[in-house]
Length: 131
Image (tube, rainbow, N blue to C red; front, side):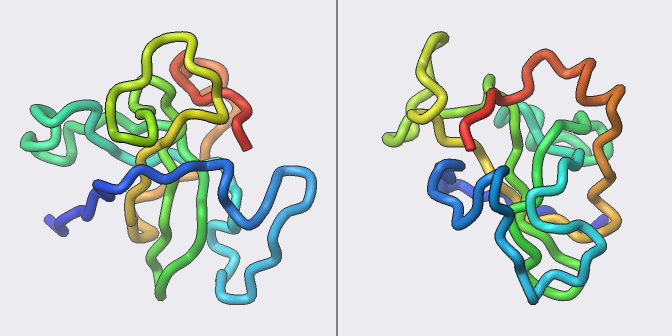
């Protein structure tokens, strides 16, 4: 099985070069998963789970940050329970969205699936509108 690279550096979603109201046109994206598109990727919810077979990881909601190579994308995981503060500590409940940093990871096209309306509606841990 192909190894996954999990970003250890939190990514502040608010510092992205685009917003929902004015999407960034990226000439380097082939269009398979456009920038900002809602997707799902397998991602470990804890360090213990990270050691398990990657096929057992849950599909979590995210969004495409950018395409970074042929058939490779950088994805922001949009799960508030995984968000941290700027110093890497777990974010306490009630932390304002602009102060949250969400994990990001690299995935190839076979490890990404479009997010459906039903998967969005059933995810109660999905990140709030911090963009």
